[in-house]
Length: 499
Image (cartoon, rainbow, N blue to C red):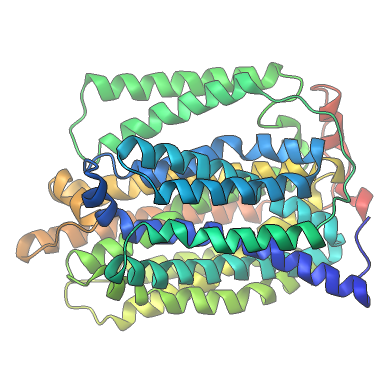
């Protein structure tokens, strides 16, 4: 049962929401701040240019693979307990990343940090769902989106300042005091309220899905720096085959990593796909714009990143409003509208040229920020309102998984498409901030960026179409009975049960 929000209860709920926002904030900081530090990490640890990208991708891949599983742990052992554990693991991982001494250590410790990030991100939506009744969750997710926007801004600003004036190691040290303070506050104000259930961990699904994603991702990433050969084809084909095996495994598992029966709930399936396509389109934008500003426009990492701050600031202001609209009306409407606004922002980005005014970058970032901040809280509210309360943790984890799959491949596809018009190695060097462009190459690379932006617009159009398919379906019962195992029957419950 959701906590009453009067008197002392309102204060406690407010503090609890602040703790959840802090978790989202520090994971957002770590997403943007590391991008600006890649050149210094490459030089400081002597990491090869083609390997430094895994400092980012490795982190995201772990979150992608573990999101549903650690969400399931939240349903089993307490969502708050797993959320707090995530904070602790994230802080320890951050400290170890700061102390890294070579390529293997930085990537390995980033994977540990990703485990903490998975525990935090997968359980945060479920904690909010436990704290607030369905009619108030949209607003809560809106405030949670502020945490993301503030974290992204802090990551950009602090990342530029720290990398320029201090040391890249401090981009990780900075997480330690923030995370430690959040853990202490969480222990005081967060309390588990959801019903605990017994679940099994899908190890076979994690292995087949993880290796499959890794194979495809490795091939796509390597294509950004070298030509297609037998080795890359082997990784690509092997990855696709393993993903096929993963689907077969999930169909036979009593409690699979991807709970297929949740797709029987009408509003959930299109909303999860919308999250995937939105991640595929949107996560690339930050990197594409920074590539443009650092490459053809020859700005420093700090100056380039500051131009994107207005978009995150305005987006943070819009998120609570979008959340309130999701509470008052069908939450799918602001979600689909946000995707359409984002597409407009990317079309504006695609107009950038060698002599364009930098105001166009600011305008496009604001439009994109408004669209993203409208989509996230509304789409989260859609999934959690449609989800049976007994599986909030799994639903929240699946939402994070689908979004992260898109984000992981967005990163690689952005480089691959943008690198089509100039030598791949040079494009990769521009991406990590170790090279700039002049003359004909600058013009050719800008043309490649346009293709990447328009590709992202196409992915956003698919996301908007998927989201629109869920309009009017929140609260409907599944169209067919669920018969995939005892635990799966929960997903056949109507979302209207909790309303």
